[in-house]
Structures are given as structure tokens and as C-alpha cells.
Amino acid sequence: MERILSKEEIAELLAAVQDGEIETDPEGDEQPAKVAAPAEKSVSRLDLLRMQNSGRGRFQNIDILLDMFARNYGMSLTNRLQTSVSVKRADMETEEYEPFLNKLPKNGLIGVIRMDPLKAGGLVLFDEQLSYSMLEMMLGGNTGGKFTIFDRMMTAIEINVVKGIIADTCPDLQKAFAPVEKLECSLLRVEVNPRMVSIVPPDAALHITTFSVTVDNLKGKMILAIPHTTLDPLREKLKERTIGTPGRRETLWAQRIGEEVGETGVTVSAHLGDVELMVREILNLEIGDIIDLGCDPNSPLKIFVEDKHKFLALPGLQSGHKAVRITGKV
Image (cartoon, rainbow, N blue to C red):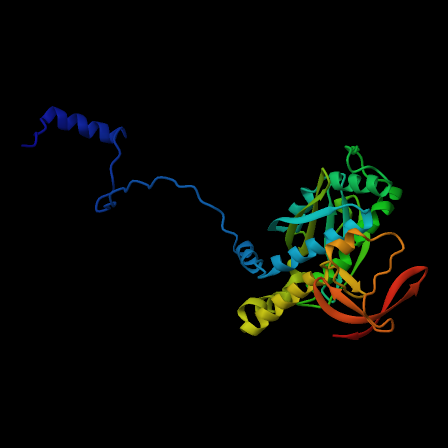
């Protein structure tokens, strides 16, 4: 049962209202009951433009072309340095141009390359370890030792020494991209200061591929950075190599296998003739003995590729060395 106020309590209540000690609501103004505010939650920033760029940054089959480039460039470095060089793809990512430049090593080399007919071109970057290692090897240094890495930018003379190694990436890029586009690549210049390199706007997306370069016990890092605007014209051509008809897929793999087989070494031998001898006869052979091969001296030699008889040839001399001239195929 509710408690009833006495006259004294009612008088004190009215006095308090008149003095303003108790606030009253206007008549007929009913306010809704207050609802407790929900607990605050952390809000993540949603960048729709970046999400769009990230989605468009996936270039199908680009890894196949980059792996082919790594193998080609490894062979080019091996031929130039006359020592075994291994180049392997380590990582691929997408990043905006300005943040990418801000993270570059301060004493590395930056090669600006042109990739006609594609616009914007690309960048080839050597970290300081790779730059100074290549410099010392070009000057006759021993790969078995430990190279000195200087805490400074390279001089113009040092850059010119290493410039040829960076330029070797251009023909190898042409070979790698040949299945999808005929490119004309060339090295425009080599910079040491990232601020001097501007090929796309700061917020443009880059396809960044990191390669590990190993020479004996020395290891360095090379980066190939290609803007999305450069690769966009190739997007559909890259897709066709997987989504297209089986014949197209087989053609791409046949081209890759053909290129690899073309670089494989085989043994070629010339056979003058064969004869069977008994063991007793072989044991009795002495210097000056003549073995009759039982073949016409004017008959062509048999040329074997590995164990397969492939050609016919005539013997002769060239530049003071014994040689054979191919006269026909088997």
C-alpha cells in the first residue's frame, strides 16, 4: 500500500518546488523512457577505392611469367659473371607507389625501365647488399669472400659498372612476356635517390615482386615493381591462358617446355665405324697395329645425338681442329 504524505510533508514539498530545488516537467509533456545507450564499438575505416584496386590487382598467370623471367635472368647473370647465379621469386604483393618508395633501402639502386607498347614502364631495384656485391664481382672480386657494404650511396662510376647488370633484365623480360605480348624493353636510367623516381601518381597501385639472388654464399634482394596501369592491357590475355580452350592452355605449356628444352645440353658424337674383336686380340694390341673397320673410306660418318642416330656427315678440318660437315638427316 502506497504511503500517504502528511500536511507538513506536502508543505515542505511545495516550498522546495517554489524555491527551485526540485525540477518539474511541463504539464502534458510526457517524455519517453530513456533507453540505455549501447556500448561503444571500434569502427574500422572502409576504403572502397582501395578495395576496388585490390580486387583488380589480381593478374592471373603473372606468376608463370615472373618465374620464367627469374630463370632467364639467372642464366644471363651466370654468363656475365662466369659463375653460377640463382634467381628465385620470393614474394608478390600489391602496394601504393608512395608508401613503397618510402620503404626502399637508402643505398640501393633503382633502374627505370621502359616496356613499350605498355605505358608507365616499371622499376628494377637492387638492395645495397646486391648492389655492392655485383660491383665487387664486376671488378674481379672473389665470390667466396665477404664483400664490404658501404654506408653511402654509390658514385656515378660505380653505378656505370653495375648498370649493365640491371640492363640485362630488359631482354629477359621480353622473353618472359613474349607468350602474351611482344615488348620492347630498355633501361632508361639508374637512380640512387627514390625521390628522383616518379613514373606514376603517389596513390597508384604497384605489382611488386621480390626475387632472391644467390651467388655462391652471397645473397641479395631484387625487386621488380610494375604499375597496374602497365599490366592492365594484358589482363584479358593472361586470363585466356587458363580460362580459354584446352588447346590454348596446351599451347602455352608447349611453349614453356620448348623453351626449357632449347636450353638443355646434349652429347653429340661422330662414329667412324664399329668392329668386333676377341679379348685375346685386344690383349695382343700394340702401338702401330692397324684395325680394319670394314667400311668405305668415302662413306659418311654417323652423327649420334645422345644414343640416337640423327645425321650423316663428312670429316674434315676447321681452324686447325677436326670437324664434321652435316650432309644429311636420318
